[in-house]
Length: 307
Image (cartoon, rainbow, N blue to C red; front, side, top):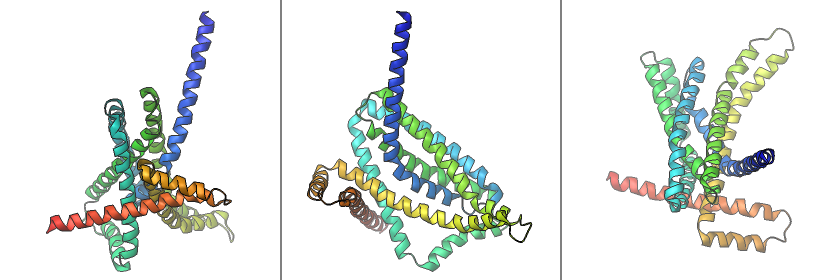
């Protein structure tokens, strides 16, 4: 009997772990949209730091991110346990913030002159060349700004993950949210460390030329050409993900939008392949409109209170 009970217990544990793994996979898909933006933002935060200080800065931001998760995960679980009705409003706020941030990025890219963009980029370069600049304080400011950004993005990731398992027990919620927070933190900052060192790896390989045709030299040149393009790609993917994820949250949070999407899907169900694009395009459109409305409110409010 004892052996049978032990096997039954182990079977239940295995089933529970399998359920948690499945739920974590679902939550990871929902939160993956924020990951591209998280990667791009954190990699950009390190720009302007001396090459030999890039990894220490990434490590410092990683530790700050871990502390953010230690604060946010229990807070999210307490909300789920005692005021679960607050999860949907928080999800909606997170979705609107994602859309707002995406529209703000697009607006900045479209309406900021090339001269202004070059001036912003020159600030980091000037700091590296100016010996009067306190680089230790400069790094601290960079780290502090990156940790603040991480706190906002981490809150979005955790709330989205919690929203996918809001109907489950507190143990399942804690397991899934903790797993997502851990995987995202390690994954994001591991990739950030790799991305910021791509150009250094390229320079190292280029300088190892030993013959007329050198494979390392060619790989190094390819890395140097690839690194800035990767940053631009991550920025574009991250912005698109903001609209898709944020718009999706808004659509599923507002019944009338969800019904519109359902009716559109039903009407276009007979058209091959088109049905695959209906939901993403609708979510993106809602995200762009929602973000534009929030941006307009923020701009108007800022001017009003400034006056």
